[in-house]
Image (tube, rainbow, N blue to C red; front, side):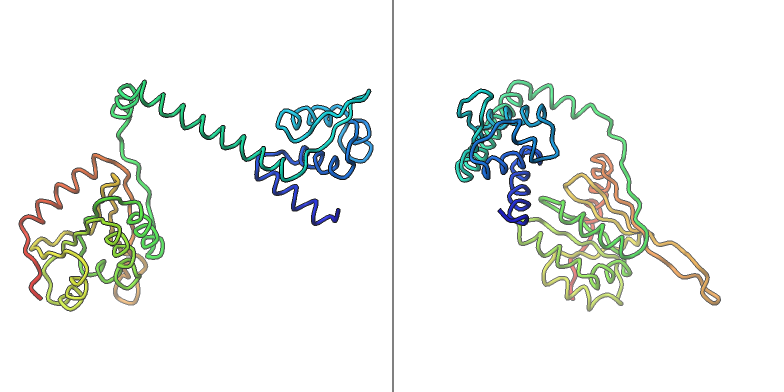
Length: 271
């Protein structure tokens, strides 16, 4: 057997849950046909006791058979049968895990639910700095949503998500059945862009002009977009956009309530 062949078979067996040393012992037996633990140890860096323990484990996995003798001789099961046996054992194990899960959930559903409701509901926040980090965070936030996404965006942030193709992520969510609502402050300078977005999303215009933009979703998270001044450029300060991702059902509820209030008191875009 070539070295590449041995390495590839060993790696494949490792993906099936067979430890590297046991995979090597199995391959040695494929070469030898039948051998004792002592003879196998002479052709490897493993000691005899280690090989014997691994042989017993391989035997329990139905990958190795005892063919008699004193001392005991072991023989490898053919490769196809060995792999089928491993896969069958894994499938049976997964079936047992799933069955156990259903039993536990059925038996303790009330207790598990109450534990989830009573645990700490403090906000978990992650700060993102710079436009690239913010856009990556927004796109990930959108992908996590299930049934609905609400966006309150000022002119700058509307242009940002439009120019960075976040619209594609929103469109994909809509194709999966999610509801996407966009609430914008009144501004003549964004009418053309709003008209473009209106082709796909439910957009409304309100008189409110918040100092920040935000997004909420039914995944119990809020994404805030904040402007900040940074380095002085000439006689002015340059501005950067940062983001705060908040994983909190309570924060999401509050922001969704605020969004719904302004949504109900807004009007559809007429452009």
